[in-house]
Image (cartoon, rainbow, N blue to C red; front, side, top):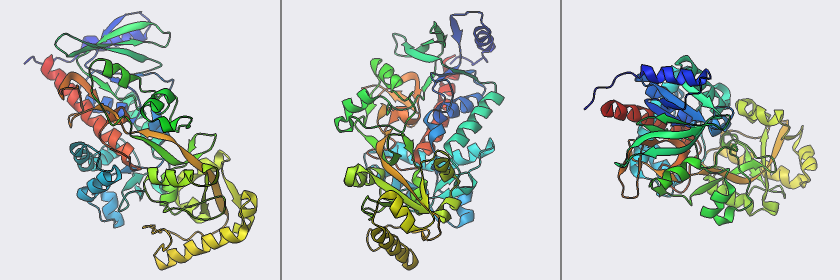
Amino acid sequence: MKKWIPTVLAAAMALSLLSGCGAKKESADVVVVGAGGAGLAAAVRAQEEGANVIVLEKMPIVGGNTARATGGLNAAGTKQQIDKGFKDSVELFYEDTMKGGYDKNNPELVKLLTEQAKDSVEWLEMYGADMSDVGRMAGASVNRTHRPAGGAAVGSHIAMVLEKTAKEKNIDVRTRHQMTDIVIDKEGAVTGIKAKDKEGKEYMINTNAVVLASGGFSANQEMVVAHKPDLKGFATTNHPGATGDAITIAEKHGAALVDMAEIQTHPTVVPDKGVMVTEAVRGNGAILVNKSGKRFVNELLTRDVVSKAILGQQDGRAYLLFDKGLRDSLKATEEYFNMQLVTEAESIAALAEKLGVESAVLGNTLNSYNIGVKAGTDEQFQRPDLPRELSNGPFYAIEVTPAVHHTMGGLKINTDAQVLNNDGQAIKGLYAAGEVTGGVHGGNRLGGNALADIITFGKIAGLNAFNYVKVEQ
């Protein structure tokens, strides 16, 4: 076992490249590919242990899909839940996640996720994140979705906190720098990566540990269709960099893939805009109505079921209906008003006229729903959670349709976040976290579990990558 020595030389070499000295080879303890939530969590966690870390992000800005997430981070047994009187447990969180994924999930990964998500919330709070509000997303038995006060958008907040933390820790985060290959020696161990900078110049980084955290492939229509042909022509909620590059590169080096055909559509995406309306809107009480003005589904069923239900309506579209009371309860809704995606009116009759829906039908739909809320029972669709009546005008509607949202499949990992080969053995020095991996979510991801996944496994990957380096050096 070799004693680890802090890589002062690596830091100096990194600085020389950034100052324009033109160095073509560098060194780092850990290289992280992707500067979304998983990548930044991995980088910060590794740096906490003393690692010299370089983060490569091919896009012009950090954040990835994390910056687009609005719903929240699922965790069980937190002080926030206890303070608000929500009774939850790791066991129930596990059961909900496995059920939501149709038991296709890797149970060991889900066990780790559900046990450590609480720690992820606390870790983010330690760096200044506001996770004080707790709501509910579809598929959850209780309120466990943590987000900023007032239900504000959580993803951009977490991305900002982690970016700020990385800067404070002097972590070398390089935007418009892209990994082009992983270097693996004849013993099958990682020895570096090949990359290109923002000018397209190629360079090498020598390292014994790489963390792949570059996201999924929802924005790669060719790759999506190759694994699930019936999604041909679907729009996506993802940022344009979610093209699965790291999956393809790692597979070339023998990495095993899992669940690649498990691709999730999000049911409430604004047609032709690609703007996702967070599930928290439904979680806080909004309902879905079709172009006839009628409800057609329990709004809190899993995303795949609600997506299918919407596609079965006229034109494959629906309206998300809510009122001022809900708007006031969820700050995240303001984004949709600012983007002018909302149809609004002072009364249901006026809203129906604007939507081209029969006023009496829409009025009866809303009246029936409100009666159910008062009674505490949704007799029509058995919606389990009825947080509020929709009776406080103005009233609002957003037209929605499903779009490709999350790729549950990806690189096969173990509980140490090591990437496995096709023989089930760990590829030495190769780690992965977040949507680039498969196995955590199975056949369907529950809302709120993506952020739990990326922070929890990002931390695991960062820590274990650096622990591996300390042994090898």
